[in-house]
Image 1 (cartoon, each protein chain N blue to C red):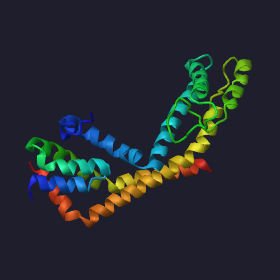
Image 2: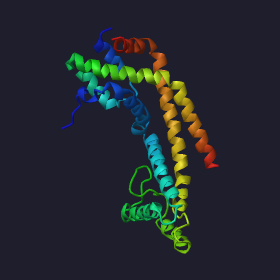
Image 3: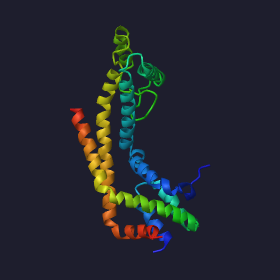
Image 4: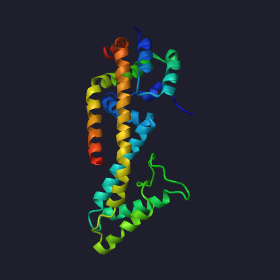
Length: 168
Length: 74
């Protein structure tokens, strides 16, 4: 059963700042579909870049991550279904065809693992994800503008309400 | 203005809470204990204060990120 009691929102004093910072950053991501898509694209980019950088070291952890990501692409893709780039899934390169990561691994064999093969699918995915991130941040800017307008129009009563709880 | 009236205003003007959560909370205000009103009120007041303080800074950060992403797209 869902617990909607306000008691569950009671923060510890020393964590309040962190909770507020985190919530403010995440609120646009959860409320607006475009911003949510942008947030997911940003998370995917961070993960893809981490794997691509790790993949530069021959025989290192990057090789394992690279192959795991390529396998994840197969596992995460249900037959006959198109991947949904607006969601975070085990497939970190949903806009890239299945054959690309496997084909880009061929030079790895000849170079003894020195070829940064994951950079190819990660780069192709980034080309698709950058416009999504731009759109999401534009949407977040619009939401910020709405909040500012709402504050400007109701400044007196909002300020008085804040004062009730801050001067205690 | 008493605490319940102040909390009602803060809930109504919160950009942190979804419309559904706002509706549920507004219906519950009269049933809330003083402690519950105080906790939620302090949280929303701090959140709103932080938002007001950082409007310009947040906007600037978003614009910088958009500019960087746009330049890397070219």
